Amino acid sequence: MTVTASAIALGSNVGDSLATLRAAISALEAHAQVTVTVASSVYLTKPLGPPQPDIFNACILLKTTLTAPELLSLLLAIETTFGRVRSQHWGPRTLDLDLLLFGQQVLSTPTLQLPHPRMWQRGFVLVPLAEIAPNWHNPISGQTIAEISAVVGDAGVERLRDAPPLLSRIAGRSVVG
Image (tube, rainbow, N blue to C red; front, side, top):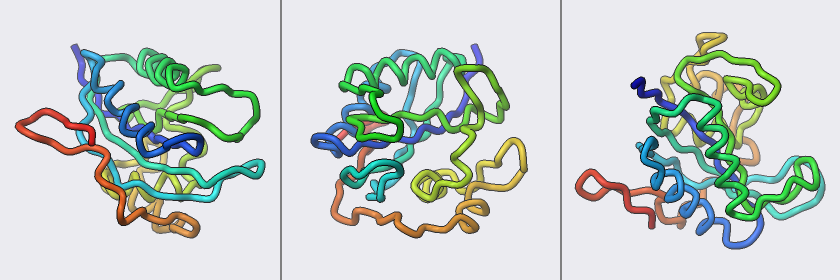
């Protein structure tokens, strides 16, 4: 069984977004083939698309024995559990979970592209990802996340200084708080 490190972006701007992000991490942790290893700080960003509330964004790293398509299916199922409805492109969302990186895999299918094709232009993804995985290399360009994030910049990406951590560790087990 191969264990693969993966990076996931989380976002929410409907309901109690902080609670939703924590609960989504718990839902991932509840899966026997997933271990969340670290979570970034929470960031508040202006949304792309139609007028809507600011978005709470974060990234997590996990280890999994699932395949990339299986992990994507799990992410989509968790989104559905949290009431995600895709009625408007880039519209408000209770929960958005994006598979950004799956090891160093490069993949392009009708349902999954790895690495995530638009992550390289988005500060709201790169800033939290650079916080927890600065040395992860883009499997296509070879640049590190920190290098790419420095070029894209952090304009419009504000760290929530008073938000409690999304994930803490006690005796080797995660506690979502």
